[in-house]
Structures are given as structure tokens and as C-alpha cells.
Length: 478
Image (cartoon, rainbow, N blue to C red; front, top):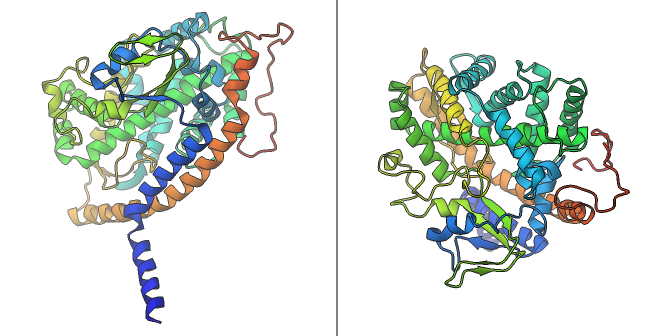
């Protein structure tokens, strides 16, 4: 009887402390499943003969330019970024097709800085007026930001205000992409194809005012380009970046007070943004395939076909005093170009096309939020931010009493711990399912078996076709 009671007590104790150990164990287990299914592919950098001081040298090497062909990891990313990963700008191989797409993206994202800032603030104001009413409201910051960027990028693409039905399509698409990437939901292609069908209709009607690349041969290619570049990547990454930035502000009252007291202090807000993107880079691993042998000397030699896995968080954690401490003041003495800091990639190897736009419009949206609310949060903050950044927004014009705010923060802290347990179990299960499914489909491998690197069919009798974007599937997440 005593043994039974002891076992029961141990089980209860283990369950009570599970928020402190189970999520970490499940993350490690997911990594092992990933390696088991995909194989130990890739050389991680920094690591081995290439330390942090040579990270950018290798990243910028002209032969570190392969994007998808020849890497098993590509099958997984193509799976998550469908539909149309073969025309996604991030995954296009070097050549005329990439150059034409990159020129188009740069043109779409261009514009006078005051106009871009005003558009971002206007979109934020509309969404905040609609979604955050009353004295105080609990929100998930990533969810709050999604419709802001859906409206903003719709306006850039179509040069008109975003109607509610289009915003709903774009937000549903982006949420499905990011949730599957973080293994918190299975992917649901029907949701994504509804946006593809909408874009096809707008293209057929001549409603897109930009000249799209002739290298994208079919209307479906052009719809997938718009969807992947602006309504997948742009909306997802900007929503994630703003969630990180606002969560940092919520958890550092001194930073929030200074920003609210002098909202026009571009330098300090820039420091806060630099430090946020240093600690929480939007990319975890960027993989590149070497197109030729690379020999940097001192044992750093990589034959053609090597998959290089550039670890952004590891690199961003080097070269700083107390890198685990959030310290915007460090950027008073640092230059981003000289630090171990590449939030938008490297100029010599396809930097993010929104490297100029992103800081500009993030400032505008941050000021719009801080003008209206104080932010409060006690949840964990990790780079992957799978909890979508829970936060309490309180109207500046009608603040809550301190005990009320403290009670909400205590609730958020406890809920976050237990949500993390359930979410980790879910991520392990769904991540395993999707990794296995992606490995079975081998989307990138299959594509390159039938096409050259510029998207031309290897068999000249295979003409491009427009498969209906809402074609039924027997699998609910295919």
C-alpha cells in the first residue's frame, strides 16, 4: 500500500512540475524524429572550422547560392509553403527567373517613406479600432497583427483599400502557413487554395496594376508568386516581427515608458528593434546548397552539393557581452553592419527584399499601438513564439488599477506554463505526421526531376498547365 501511495505521489508530483521539464524534452524528441526521417543532412554554421567570425564570409560566398535543388530539407519547406513553392522567391534557383522576380518584388515594395509609414499606421488604426475595444483586452499579438499586414500588403499589390473578404482570405492563408510551420496545426490546402482562386480571378480581370515577370509562364504561376511572396512570407514574417517587438515592450516597462514618452525618438526605437531581432531572429536555419567547391582555407572546405545550414540564433548570440540580456543600449556603441547581426540576410547573398521597408513600417505600427495602449505580459518569450504572444492591452485613457493588472499577469503566467505542456505534445504529434508526409511526397525532388533550374520542363512535350487551385483531395491537410 505504501509503495502504491508513493508511486501515485510521484506521478502527481511529476505532473505538477511537467511544465518545467516536459516541453524541453519534447523539443529534443522532435529534433530526433526530424533527423531520423530526413537524415543528418547539412553542415551547421557557425560550427567546425567556420566560427562566428567567418560566418558571413561563407554565407556571402558566390558558390553558396543553391536554394532548393539537391537538399532533402527543401522537400519539407516546399511542403509547408505550398501552394507554388517552385515560384516562391526564397526558393528560386539563381538565374533569369529569380532576377526577374526579384526586380518585380523590389518595385512592388518601393515607395516614398512617408507614404509607406502612413499606410502602415492607417491599416493598424483600422484593425485596432475593430478588434481592441473597451478598457482592457487580452490578445495574441501575432493574431492581432495578421490583419494589419494583410491589409497593408494588399494595398501594395492592388493599390486600393483591402475589402473585408480579401483580408479574411489572406489572414486565413497566412495563419495556416505559420501554424503548420510551427507544428501547432496540420496544413489545410483548401484554405490556401481559396486565396489562389481569388488571385486568379483578379489576374484574369486585369486588376493587378504591376507588370509581373514574363518568366512566370502561366496565370497559376503568377498567382502563386503573389500568394507566396506577399500573402505568405510578407504577412507571416511581419506579424511575427511585430509580435516579438511588442512582447519585448510589454515585458520591459522601462523601455515602454521611454518609447511612450518620446515616440519620435527614431534612434532609441531603432535600438529596441535591433536588439529584438538579435535575440529573436525570424529565421532559425537558412539552408543553402553549394553549386561548386568552396575552400576558405584552414580546413573549411565544402564540396559542391554540400547543404550548409546557417544558424541565425547561434550567430546572433556571439560577439556580445551578456548576449542573453535584452539591452537596447548596446546599440549606442554598435553598428549593425559590424556586429554579428543579419536580421535581413547578407547583401551579397539575396538579402530580404523588405530590408528597407520592414523597419520603416514597424516603427509606424509600434507608435500607433503605443499611442493607444499600455502593454503587459508575463508569458515566456522564445524565438519560435508558438503561443502567438499573449498580452494585455490597456487603454491609456482609462488605465486599470495595479492589482487588476497584477491579477491578469498572474493568470497569464500560469496559463502559459500549462498551455506549453499541451502545445508541446501537439507539436510533437503533428510535426511527426507532417515531416513523414513531406518526406513521402518529396515535392522539391519530384519537381526538379521534371524541370530545369529555371522551371522549364525537361520533357518538351510537357506543356505548363493550370491545375484548378481548389481541386479536391482525399487528404484533409494535403
